Image (tube, rainbow, N blue to C red; front, side, top):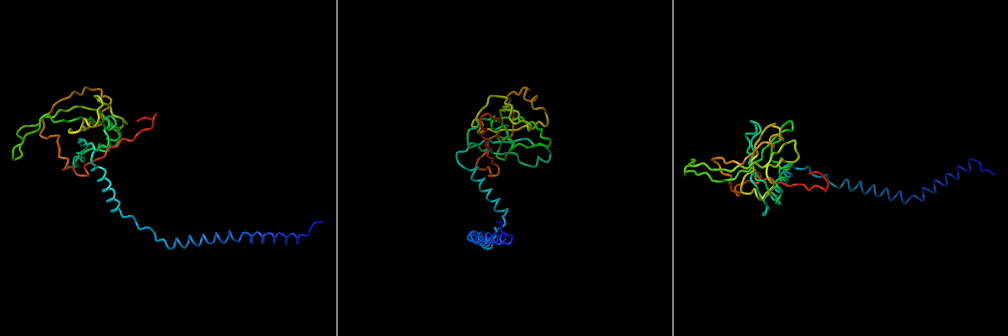
Length: 237
């Protein structure tokens, strides 16, 4: 015998009420969690706005700790200007190294931390090592009495469009460069392949300035940490 529709409706309503009664603990727990979250959100004050000065001080302190640590290797670096506007800046820097890296690794992308990038992405640099052979002699008044003599050794050709340098001599560790100056000659948009293929003999030049410097007088902002990221096996450097 088929039950009438009214009886089916009563049975369905009763089943719904039974289900709601069984779900009461879950509904209460959900409402309690929502109330607690809302209360916490009201009580928790919004974070204070970030102070750019504080962030700058933190970065400055981190840089100071990084480049003034004892035991670091350091090599002086200087470069030529790339434009008239670039002449107003001092380009001399002291490169800092945590490990005795090979020159070929340093003159890859890391060296562009201190080399200028030019519009168009094409700039050629000749990296030379300048070493004192004879220091200049000056009078008590500071006048040059005898010029110094510097040995200039072309080391590599570096191009903004290249990811690695073209070495002109055997690779050496950066410890070999300590006490001398890495000097970058700007060659504009000259084809770097042609520059690398040209002869670059070692020469000596008279100069009124010495490559020597007093490390105690080098400011924190003139020190640049140079790191080389390791590459997984099988990937290009």
